[in-house]
Length: 119
View 1 (cartoon, rainbow, N blue to C red):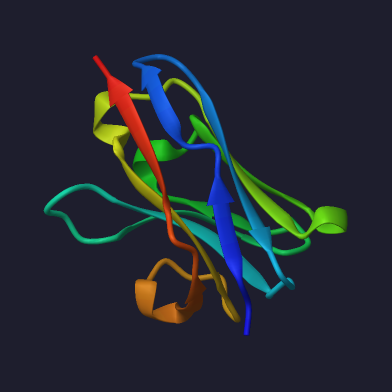
View 2 (tube, rainbow, N blue to C red; view 1 turned 30 degrees about the vertical axis):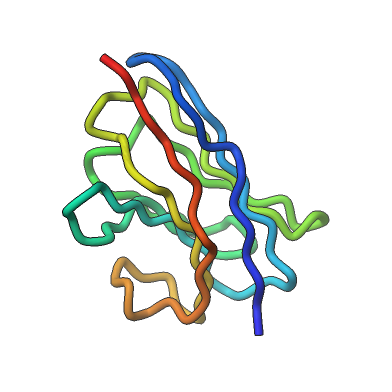
């Protein structure tokens, strides 16, 4: 069993930045961030291998968001810059065995942290 706890969400103006954190009880090979806006499905944002050597991003966040890990603290981060109102969603941390974009590839999930970007 892997427990995940997200933090760092909040309200920010468009163009601003936020840094999300996900504390893991123990690491898995693949760590990812997904997001879910009201009325929408849960969408892939970014994923990384625990070593940080491999990363993948959803196209709309490429160049604005950065996923990283702190192995010593069992923590995964999502640095979000140049935020847009369309980034508003609940952001979820996930852990799995394979670097993937599909929700079904991740067995462990956090409770989510809300991000609101005002225009």
